[in-house]
Image (cartoon, rainbow, N blue to C red; front, side):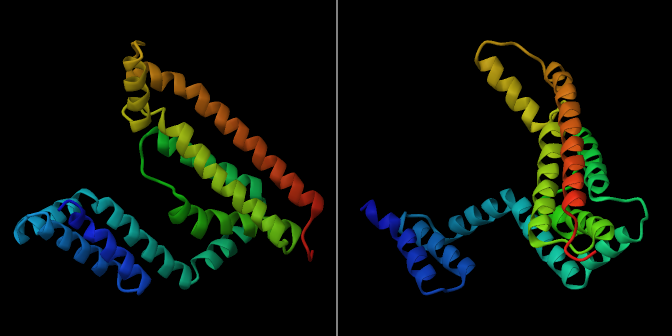
Length: 225
């Protein structure tokens, strides 16, 4: 019976409805599906082990989340905001622009630096918020949401436009493969070279956006100067 092989789905549904341990439910569902499909126990364990090795980078990402959470609990955001507040000429726009430049250059050289979870939430957003409050007083929730949104956008700009400058990046190889399938012969170097002015335009656009955000905050001002 083919339908019996779907018993794993039923186990997952029941496990989630009963709010059982997620990892245990998934493993039991996988082992049960393998057994009813005719696989022996050691083959199932081997398959699960290979899948774990192939997705180990996801495990490292989850490890990063826990480390960031521990650092935040011990005052990382407050320390970042306090440090940036001690700088005299720093502003929200300058903080975001400096990060945009660093993020773009790092992506262009394929250096793994940045991320919404690893950098924006615990470091860049508190620093931009601290710089804004230093100049304009305590900011309202709407102003903080604006800063948070632009900080996340800066991360996206730097990563998206900067990574294609690196000749061996996944984005460049995807563009080359897609164009070649359509009959357009290009090289990774030509795609990478064409991505440079696009990255510069993205950088200029981000600088203008950061400057406008800074002006908007300064014009409206904080809640308590």
